[in-house]
Length: 134
Image (cartoon, rainbow, N blue to C red):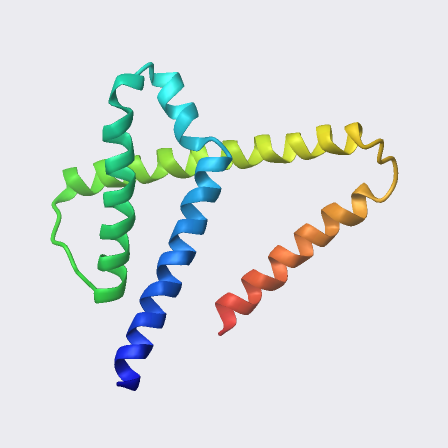
């Protein structure tokens, strides 16, 4: 009974975390920007299904240790797609940082901005170090 409860809690927690990550990626505008730049709004349902399938398959491959024997061509295609996604995500995050500057200007914040930026940087650094050393 305890094992079943542990599985339910683990799956629920994983679902909440996954939903949070995908909502963050969606809120910073990665997918709408890709759809707008490719002029393929008619295929938005296909984009959504591919995003969901990619998240599910990525988790299954990671958790279950699934190995694939792809030849060079499919592996190169996958690497290019992953690189495009990471690049789009990085550009969206850069735009989010630009929106922080606009926000600080709107609230007329003149001092303390460097403290906030350093807090974000050191928080990210400490989190990354804690992750990689545990």
